[in-house]
Image 1: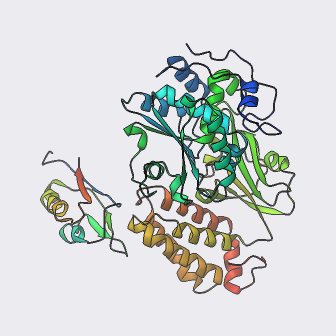
Image 2: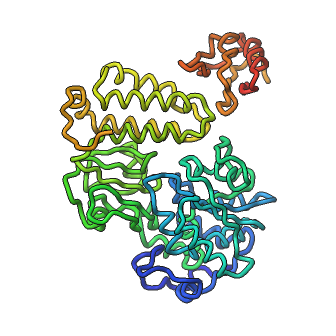
Image 3: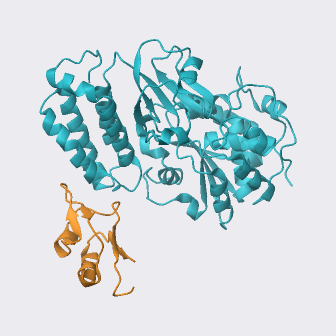
Length: 400
Length: 68
């Protein structure tokens, strides 16, 4: 039996980002104590993870217990901690790794023992220098049997996709394969998920569920940007309202009509301070929390130009493998730029749905579909601006 | 594979290179998008099964698969 739910969590408001920093390994052990003993396929721990309701914090919100159990059932297993965070607007994994690497490494050790993996790897984006340094230092502080391999992965959007990441840590190009790694015994878990797992292993399911909602328990890191006083990474109780989240970031500094929820794979929504930040509530708006990038988009900026800019970025970030993504996304960006420039607006507006139909559900990974959802919701939320661009009267200072 | 049931034609987009033979051999089921990549527009009925098998065999990239 592992020592589950026997100790109390130290007094701090934030589970993952203790105020003043998490310190080195000794401070970490003083705060949390040693890791409980975990056996392969440990039934008590698997039950606790299931009861906790923990879901993947990388964006897909897949039940962690299901994934752990699936991989634990395989004969040869490996574990990869995904700290790549390719989403350009997201900083939460980099901040977590830089400030609390030992909690992530704890989770990686727990996951590796649970699925019986002999090897574990932690992947960090090559350009995230502070995070990589912190992880490297933390690894060196730990007992030899708890030292994963650290791999720096090229800084590309799709490199964070699970199958692309497995390619990258195996020395192959970081491109998606269209297959799910866990079916082959490779457990890929987001670093924040692992940090939560380390806490569930120590403090149990009931403790975990004390935050969040019944259907979406726990806390989650969010990257808040845009027109707030203090942008940055905050830990939110799932189910908090958008207004409360912005208040925790010092409040809005200028009028806001629209928010982006979920980042570059997310959806644009009209700003509503009462909006509940849970996947259940967001589903009614066709949105999800994703990796919890939340941007308060200021009225003074041009939303259409932002939609076009991100579409162009996503076109360039295609892994270049599937035709509809390779050709469709640049064509989509062309049409959006035409709308922003007010040239042949009607033709461009007719072109967008035609492109949508030729791109949707035809890629091997979620890259093209994520981009489509971003664009479609942006054109809806900023629909009133289209005519201003047609007439050349958009008042926003930001242009492409 | 049963000869009198509908089959589904799957395209592996990672492999497909827009040769377009599938659309030529099986125009009732496969359309091409504006870049020449196949869009499977319907099921493969038993009477089209022979054509579908020819299309699968003709694909230079081995990107097509027939499934029940």
